[in-house]
Image (tube, rainbow, N blue to C red; front, top):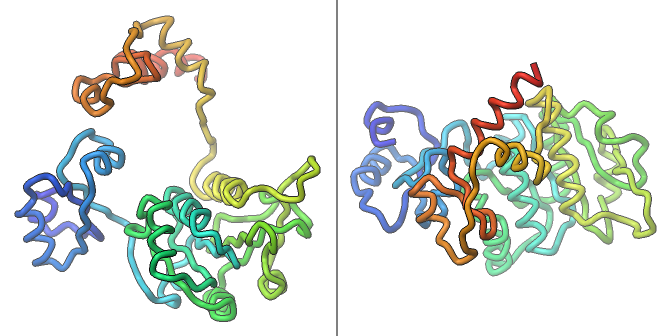
Length: 287
């Protein structure tokens, strides 16, 4: 991380552990005008693929307050149309960032305190993705100007999400649970998709709609295969070849991580007992 700053590697944002001595990194960021945020030790540990680190660099993301600049870059952009519940908005923004979206646009005014609630619920995902407040008219006009395909999820849709191409530059729209997507947005949409429902309750929770569209867009844009855990079979395979150990619920996850151990409830799993062994067993089968 430090060497990358010294070498002049293009870095969009830096996150440092507020409890660690990172003065040299802070000084270099200031010199190069790289935005810097502070986080907790646990915050950085969760984001790092290398365990405990003092600093992380964000590459390949950009921040902007300009609707025009955001839309001009294309990719996947989310529009949460008329969504007012701040906690729901925070969860949705977090899902958008995790999935690699380029930005989020909102058409509901929020007070300073409401925006703080949104940030907390999103795990401060707005550090890493643009979140822009605007009007419905400006959002739709800008999307059309930059030739984004507008795809809205609503119960009047005439096709499923997987029947629409989401692999290009798209504006994905989800509305509030009660009012749904506004008529103005529906009229401007290139496609209106409907999530399959087979029950009596008239709509899914906002997070379900966001999750369905997120996974479908990811599948189309990034993967030929989506692999997910089943929560049991993987551990059955691992325990057939390696050892798990009895522990306690109260054990400290960070301290365990420092000893190359993981905790599943009160079960302790050495890193060497999971991961590579499953690949070794399953790779020949899949081949």
